[in-house]
Image 1: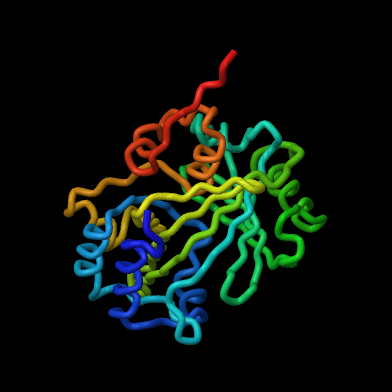
Image 2 (image 1 turned 30 degrees about the vertical axis):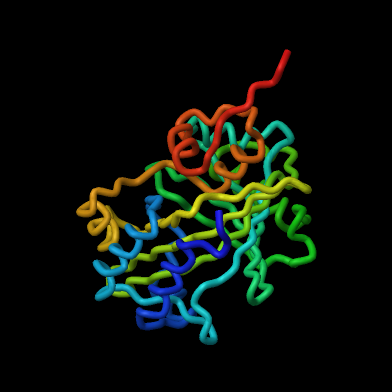
Amino acid sequence: MSWPSRSLDSVTTLASALPGVGLDEVLSEAALQTRIDRKYLLTPEQFDELGRRIAGSFRVLDIDGRRVFGYESVYFDTPTLDLFRAHRQGRRRRYKARVRTYLDSGACMFEVKLKGRRGETVKHRRPYDVEDRSRLNGAATELLAQLLRDEYGQSMPELEASVTTCYSRLTLVDLEGGARLTCDVDLVCSRGEERARGSDMILVESKCSGSGGNADTALRQMGVRPISISKYCVAVALLHRNLAANKWNRTLRTHFGWARETVDA
């Protein structure tokens, strides 16, 4: 795949075409820490069409003139990848723990995403020392242990950094409708010295508190349906090709060139 990608070109074009909105307004009007997430994988052509359909209702996050931002996420799991397996099996009580670094500003956050009783995503986040981003420090361990105890009645397992994802993101906000779209491109997954690249497509996540927003309606009219996928699960599958991916098999094979590797006896 050529780099930079066609998908990044599409994202950058839409970013420059929409009116901007500052971070303070986004946080005050559309923080959406508890929300329903829907994920879509779009070709650049589909993304261009989506942009035309939602241009009248969405604005683009603008911070000091920058509209496309670099992200790094370090995900934590058990040595046997129990958190990945819980997502693969669709367990009701599942969660992700990660440290996210905003590469353009150097800001860093520890984040825990829990699956709620009605299928909603509940996110908890705290500022984090960027020097600790590859490990769980005492404050992060305490927060996660408390959340697991209070929400799931579980004790905290031993966790370690499992995979890292890097990508570029455009964030679109519908302030009136209370919805947000994140548009991620140029995914690079790593584990130690191993590297794997994602596909030349845009992962669009619709985040809203209700049954769906303007973007979900537009995508449905375009014939695009939500998919069950996450950057973490893609990263684990691409870097651990001996693991079964089950419900993501078709998406991974079609869009990421994935094939499960068998281990010789």
